[in-house]
Image (cartoon, rainbow, N blue to C red; front, side, top):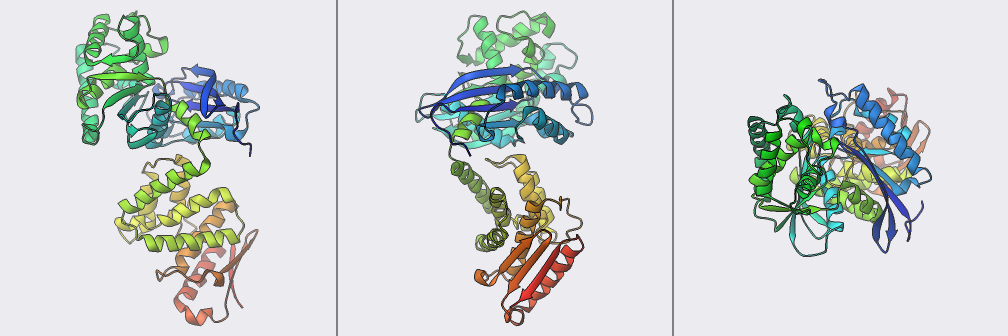
Length: 492
């Protein structure tokens, strides 16, 4: 592990719906100064087919761009690079295949992050590049297929939302005829307002200064600045002026405005409609244009201590458990026993936190029904958004929760993955030993692991004292045997 010191270079790769970006910065006195910035308009957000697959052309454009980024990143330590993918790859049915190939050409792992994690990182980037103050901030980022809303103060994001409305998607849906007409704008604005209305009560009246980050806000600000308006502030009246200007042009190809980049021309209509709806629904009169963006937040996240990120994820799990009424003492007992078994197997330390979080929330499905609670819990985890987590991490936790009880043969897991099997074994045994909702004596529970063999050693008198647990263990041994793994219990 290479530590981050003065002059260390860090890199963030942002796989956005409209553009892919690479930001390289140098650490100087706790700040990150730009070294290099690459941007390519890959436009994947507009190239999903009817089955929500990335079309071959978009697939190829993305890989070629990342190959070029990969060349620039040669020599960077893996822990100094973080690549994140957003809404288009959250939606795409073939995103797993794209990510698999993309990681090969980039040379580094790529995380598909959740909407609220994207929002947190956006706020991190914006707040780090603003003068420090006590102001309560509203930050908006309108991307190609999603819009993030954040309430924050100082460096902390307090309220985060991510809605599925973006400049690419809205332009395709409400300006599909290629006309920048009054009617199309009206329909697009009303549709956006109806979605933003669902979250408006959480935001209205709770901020002092509104900021717009990257994407559509930056594009609109550039056009307004090219037309003689302020370069760093957008007024509600200016949005109306810009809309009327677009309507007069009638079609995107006839737009000839200073500051309007070619990659924004086709999506300016949808983006402007959403921005107008944001202003009207959240009662914004003016918005300051922020310099920070998602990629800057990613850089500062690399710079922050690893335990700070872990604390954030632990806090997210704690809130989830509270939301679904988890019995905390029992969940903590299961977590202690699971970690005890996992440590005994000397398994991969980097996977240990995922096991801990899975143990803590293994019963969240009880809020729906005790029957099939593992299935309900897994569904919740696969369909929730928690700050600090990549989607792949949440899916692993979901898989562990799904597999904490019941038959193993139906579990959609890779049983050739030793780390995953060790996690499953540790969690399932912990649930068995805590079935009476009491913490067992850990020193009496010894577990050894070698290849596909697990050996559990217990005191000789243990069987007579715990007949129900003994029965559950016998059943567990049979379940693992059907998969070609061996779990044996010895009594000394």
